[in-house]
Image 1 (cartoon, rainbow, N blue to C red):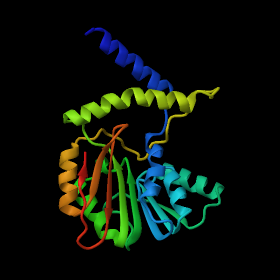
Image 2: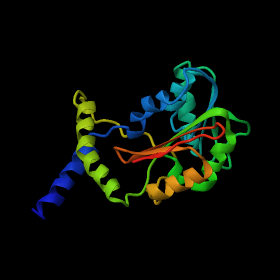
Image 3: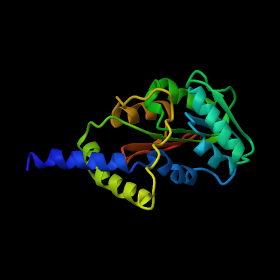
Image 4: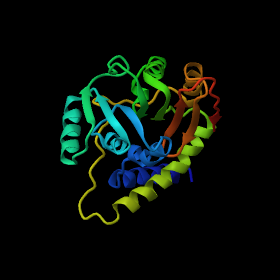
Length: 231
């Protein structure tokens, strides 16, 4: 049994590699459900090829995407022009210091926060969020606790099932998801520490561990907000 488990995990990893799917895009519908039907301005931090930006543009008057990778920003502009999506701009910029000035009714950040200085980034999001605005983060955390490892164990076979379903009708190899930023690295901060810092900087923030190696954070910029950490 002890020698069988590593072989099974290796086989599962090979299957997942052969049947890739975009884990971040999986959360886009959930992100939209956290937002008003219409809002004025939005900022997507680490916008990559602009998929979420174009979704936000269906509800917002203006959407701005920032990413430090010039090549991916150029691709985002091409895709946005081809889709005739109005009210969208992209800038090559590093967060949190390169966030354009002004305030936004919505700020989103997907699979990027672990690349940034946590406290500085959360404080910048808070300072750039308009009164009544909504911040939505989908992030990655280091696996530390028994709950983390349990969710990872459940996610592994589910990841294979979703990958098979999304790829079963393909006749050519599935493309790898486009990288969100120029430099990638694994998350090195655990969920408890992230939650502690979020509650310090964003009183009332709601955080929750999720399947597929993600957690979510939602914060609404309103006085005397209340929230909790959902395990």
